Length: 187
Ligand code: AMP
Image 1: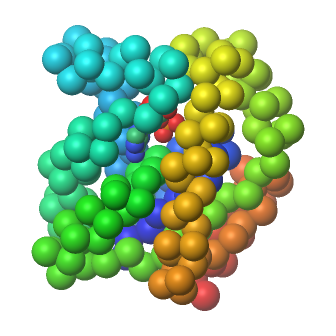
Image 2: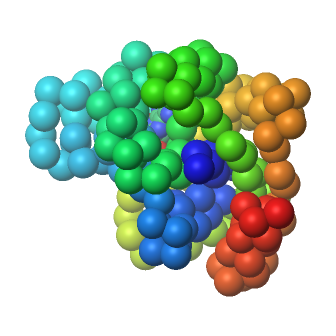
């Protein structure tokens, strides 16, 4: 089973992905986590991406596609992946389809977490106060939301046309959202 958790920044994708890892033994593939690890390790890749990420812009398709490619086989062998924060552009979605197809696999479901912008801003300002993640500052978050609306939202018709999209209300408690995701996956 391959699942994309889809939604704007701070919609709760990472939280729900981690729960699905626990409950279903799937592998979380979060390009944001991989990039933050690269920055923390001081690698060349991290150095290249740090400024782009703290501004809130997207890093290049080539970089994130290569990160996913390096981990995909292992995730498929383990029973499937939860894509969290990837794909974020049509080019990434097409590359993902091609990479999966080479392994004889496909995307089975795309769950879109719907959260309105006011709630997102509240969540992220709380997270910024608590965790101080650099790209959660109000200016960077505005850029991230713009990137979502411009580059990532066009993936909704891409997956809708393939009949893969399920919408889940992401405004409820973590448990309520989790129950709706489970229902979507088990239906
Ligand atoms: P996230 O933790 O998923 O919100 O990602 C944090 C930041 O990493 C994003 O704002 C981008 O700068 C970068 N990033 C993560 N995933 C991608 C992606 N699929 N495409 C481009 N940039 C990404």
